[in-house]
Each structure stands twice: as C-alpha cells, then as structure tokens.
Image 1 (cartoon, rainbow, N blue to C red):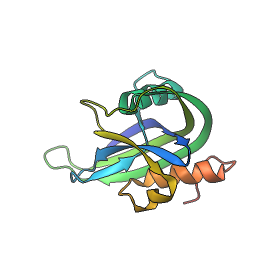
Image 2 (image 1 turned 90 degrees about the vertical axis):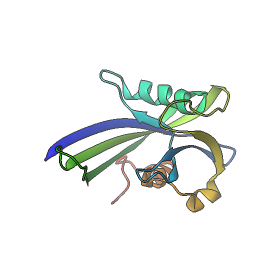
Image 3 (image 1 turned 135 degrees about the horizontal axis):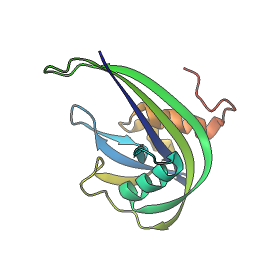
Image 4 (image 1 turned 30 degrees about the vertical axis):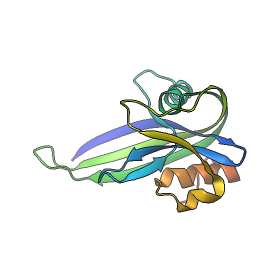
Length: 150
C-alpha cells in the first residue's frame, strides 16, 4: 500500500466572538467549512505556511500569537485505477492568530471558494471538518500537551 504524509498549518482567528473560516468542497463536492490554512511547501517553516495560507484564503495579513497544538489523523483512501489504496497520515499544526491588515476576500483559483466570519455559537450548526472542533477545543482548553484527547 502506498503511504503519504502531509504536514499543514492552520490558524484559529477569533475576533469579537466570531471565528474566521474558509469553505472548501468535500471529496463528494459538498461544501464544508475549514480553518484557514494548508499544506507546507518543501523547506517552508510552519509559521510562514500559516501566514501565507491565511492571506491566500482570506485576504488578511495575520500575526501568529501562539501555538495551540497539533492534530494527527490517519486514513486509508481507496482510489481507482492501478495505484490502489493509499495510507494517508496528516499532521496539522494549529496556531492562534490575530488579523493585522488586509481585507476579507474570497480565494481565487485555490482550494477554497469563500471566507467568512461565523459566530462561535453558530459553529456547531455548520457543516465543517473535524479539525474545526479540535482547534476550537485547543483554543478554549489550551492543554499543556498540545493535543486533544482522542
């Protein structure tokens, strides 16, 4: 079985009781809300990754104000063709960030199509990826281990 590893950096940006999220299509095409952020480029520092990704996906310049923790997931993807199944390991670094400039806008030609602020109280009602919940728990609880219990 082929193995893949993806390291990515994301940010929790909370302002005036609202969380900044981006919208991305799920594998089946259903739109779901995600934290702004994304994959590291080879040789890129994770801090630089989250700053770059936030600007690409939301239009905002940010200051990273803290490291909240890490999340790790492992899944098997079954893809058709000759390549067969893939054992995928994702490592997600979660930062806290504060908007310092720029203007909210949607990403053009990227992995997301919409950026928006959502009331923290409304997040549980959104169609969202699991990482949003993990990151909010890291933000609220600030565990010394930097991880949310499974």
